[in-house]
Structure formats: C-alpha cells, structure tokens
Length: 244
Image 1 (cartoon, rainbow, N blue to C red):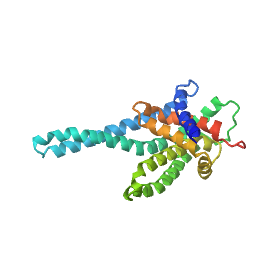
Image 2 (image 1 turned 180 degrees about the vertical axis):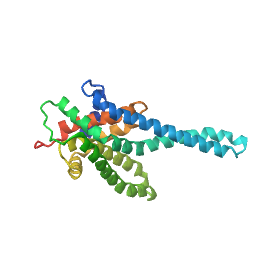
Image 3 (image 1 turned 135 degrees about the horizontal axis):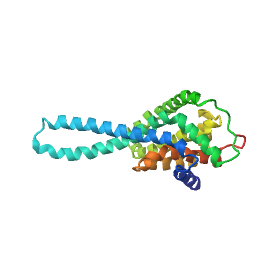
Image 4 (image 1 turned 180 degrees about the horizontal axis):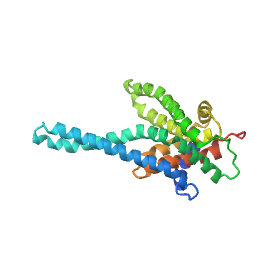
C-alpha cells in the first residue's frame, strides 16, 4: 500500500519534468495561460474588493484601531489561498478541459510510441463535450461535500475531519486528472471511479502530490499541465487494463 502510494506521488512529480518537453510544449501553452490568467484575475479582483471593504470600514473607525489593518490582511491572504485551492482547480479544469484532453493524447503518443487511441472526432466536438463532463464531476464532488462538512459538527469524529478532507481532496484530484487519459480511451466516468477504487493507494498518492503542488507559489502555475502529463503516464504504465 505504502509503495503504491509513493509511486502515485512520484508520477505526479514526474509530470513537472515533462512540462518543458519540446514536443509537448505547444500543447502546454494554453492550459498554462489559463492557469496564469485565472490566478491573476482571482487574486487581483479579491485584493481590490478587500481593499475597498477595508477603506470603508476604517473610514468610520477611530485612528487608534488602525493596527487592525495589519491583522486583517494576513487573514485575507489565508482566505484567498483556501479559495484558490477549492475553487481554482474546478474553474481551471472547466475552461481547460478540451485542451487538457489534447495534451494527454499528445503526451501518450509521444511517450509511448505505437499507442492507438480511439478516434474522438474534431476538436470543436471536444470543446463542446468536455465542459459537460467537468460539470458532472463537479456534481459528484458536491454530493460528498455536505456530509463531509457535517463531520466537523460531530464530537469525536470532528478530530478526524481534516484527515478525511485531505483524502477526499486527493481522491477528487486523481479523478479529475486521470479522467483525461481514460476518456481518450473511451473509459467513462462510472468505470473510471471503479478502476481507481481498485488502485486506491496509487490514486491517493497521485492526488496528494497534486494537492501539495497546488499550494506551492510559482509551481502552482504549471500544476494543471504537469498533472495531466503525470496522470497520462500513471494510466499508461499502471492503470490501463490489457484489453485497452
């Protein structure tokens, strides 16, 4: 179990090495730009709103309470980090899903010559179809979010709630990124969850690494394409059934 967890973890890290691969670089550009733009817009917009709110608050507070400004900004930074973690991945993958599928396809064909992929149709069909798949994955996440939140209210069990949230986050990220290579082989969502459940330590190790990389400044800009490439290698080398 620990060995499989470690393998999954290092497959995610291995994706970082392939981001600069000359053959794949042009397919990385669009997911990378989506990441950068979303980070910039979310953080800039949130900072502007928070700054405006602080100005309105301190306009009627006594001057001696000005020190609160230095306390509230760190709280804001922590809040933004949490927001980025929970919302950014969903939005980034919703927008980047057609291009992530293409990146996964090109990565598999380049890294594993001789691979045969089912014909999925022109790119415009993927652009139309992929967001709906992302929405289905989001609905799956929402089904589990409310019960997990309720765990924080149950005495005794609430001590384990952070650990369960980590496991859930890692599982969701594994499902998110391994969907791209599996969908390229016509493996649908229900079968994907079954297949990953059969290799849960691998999936949790992979998702844990992505979770940690998302929280690392600068590195988080390239997490999405790196995760797609890492997921593609994990699928091709460890998860792909012989008949596919």
